[in-house]
Length: 497
Image (cartoon, rainbow, N blue to C red):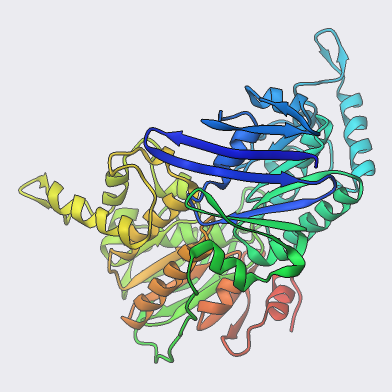
């Protein structure tokens, strides 16, 4: 056995993040770890990578007991980790990011040509193509993911931990990553894959360990299980089927007419975009990242201004209005990036829940703290948000738990129009079920929803109509009955039906 973790326990005060976990990894194997948010997956891997120390338990590599005091220790021991949020220097080139910490050159002089040659050699050796001279900030998420993997391979990793590696990747990039993992295992590398996407786990994993509430609920060979059994082990119950009832849409709650935004190089970021959302319908927008979806959401919500065109929310012209004014006209917004747009890392759970509600939850100029506490406590319970208390800083919440808090906050606005951008990014299957159910409840109550998601299964499951964006334009529209992954993929790639 290449790696053996025995009886790993990690306590934070009275809270146990890991409870007596046994985990093993064979050479040349992909071993996936699945579980709900807060189940202890990342904590266990942070212990292996030297970022945390276990309260008790032992780790053995090739039969020898080890204890990594830091990530540097782990790297020297042959363990590398690719984090959920990329840890690259955006202004550096790909080659510079890969060799940093062990740069070629003599003395203080960095040999850039040699760095490029090294990366080209890594690309050839492992079959992962990148442009060593490209700047990271101008590279697609899929390329950045390959850079992270090449970096740990350059550091000599034999065991590679991937923490939710496909969260920001397109379907094509996901498949390329899974193919790369399979190729690397053939070359003797071993992977630990933390994921909540069971279809990807079933594609690439050899074995799967399921965690729930910090403990192991099952260890299964891929050939002896399926996604249904895994989901049951993860949540401890059967998942419910979604019921999207037929609804006749009502009046327009959003109208986007001929909206354009000029790009920095003359090419429009948004090019004469026209769309509408009616009360009681979910309109999905599919598209490869970078084709104008983010800019469209920003211009609708007032975070950016259009160069031309008109936007109306609930029948009121909001073109050029501030974010606050647009929200007061009936907009709620689950943002695509919870950290950039959805929360302040240093704010408490209660303050984060309050954001956007503060004007209605005050009397005589003072906040009604009792009502706020009751409201946010209800969300924590309803969405199973794992937090020490309402006074906990959001920076200590897992990404999935922060996502659930933001979703609850925006759903509770009760507005006639809701933007739901990547509403289930980084959440587990149980939370996904809850969020999808709540979105459909809002639809049945008459809310019009604009859904933007990189998950085509989510788009197909929830949408009444699907629009596809390509190079800043609406490239096509399909009804729920017409839409398939194949048709959407064709339009997303710039093809025609």
